Amino acid sequence: QVQLVESGGGSVQAGGSLRLSCAASKTINIINGMGWYRQSPGKQRELVATLTRDGYETYGYLVQGRFTISGDVAKNTVYLQMNSLKSEDTAVYYCNAGGGWGTSWGQGTQVSVSS
Image (tube, rainbow, N blue to C red; front, side, top):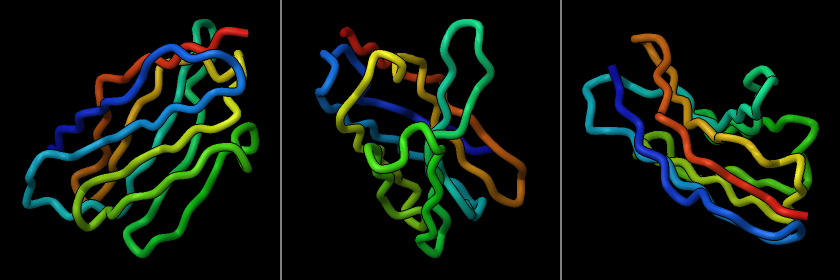
């Protein structure tokens, strides 16, 4: 099992920026990929962005061009830079990590964007 700790959520006006951070606890497990998902009330959890151990990035179509994932999966750390935020980006953002043990989720951090 891998424990994940997120930070960086908060409230911002539309058009603003926020940066989320996620760090995994020291573990003997090898993490193959880390990423971010989000969930807003009444909706299913959706992909925001993922980063593989060898640096391959993927993005959900709603955030592509506005959000950037970065970090070093080998060092168990990933970040999410969110620019040009919209009210529809309001959600709880969850960090995710996957490897041989399965997947782990962080507790989530709230992002609220006011228009």
